[in-house]
Length: 318
Image 1 (spheres, rainbow, N blue to C red):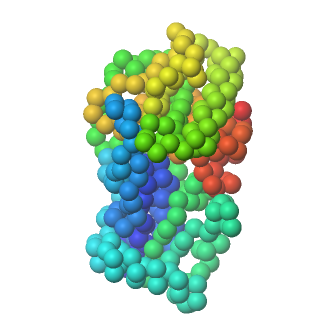
Image 2 (tube, rainbow, N blue to C red; image 1 turned 30 degrees about the horizontal axis):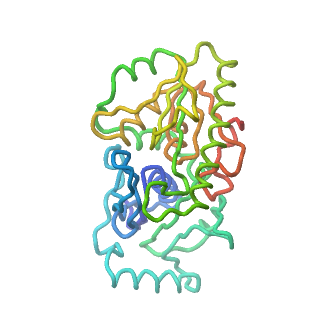
């Protein structure tokens, strides 16, 4: 244990939380700080689509990483900013931080268009004994040197309950994981429809479909008898985007926790048609198959991240 502490501000969903944790883990190792997690102050209400009644509702995201073997502890309330006064204190401290010698914050830099890139030059700064990390840091360049550690950190604590027939088929075939992200820019069943956003989401689906079909052709020609396993946040009318085939399986059944079960089954696949989602990025990156093939979309429109270094250089562009 070190006397110095890094507090990672966890926010958003599963994929983003993994990026925040991985980068903060790497920072803590490089700087020789203990890693603690603030799982409260960064959680803001998001919208979630309910496929049962075709409506969106607000929900408060929760800390998703407790199912994994992470070694970091939760930060005590006194080291978090989870209150109105804490919010003001954080704003003041982060504002003056550039002007003080002992930095209290590592905040991911964004350009005028809110884009980011890999940049760890801040590691040369002088830091306070309590240091706060904010940002998503969506690039393996921040933490690739600690991959062996992260494979252990991001393993599941307990056996995952899932559809055994899918699992057996994935394990015993040339399985290819596909993640098809829906409703990227719109809320098509909400009362207040934004036609421009709906059109953008439809365009996103069409371009994603082209990418997936090209990638399926790639694997049909590359490996022997591939089976494709499709994961999605919304399977409505997905047959119009991905044609039915005897070797294409829609993973639309789960036992308890769809996020956990999908992530587990994705990671068991041997190859990946990586979708425009950080969730699937991590399933592919954490795969232990030494011979895995990871395809990723060429079109910037299908990049889910604002980080120019988001895609690993070893992945094949389609």
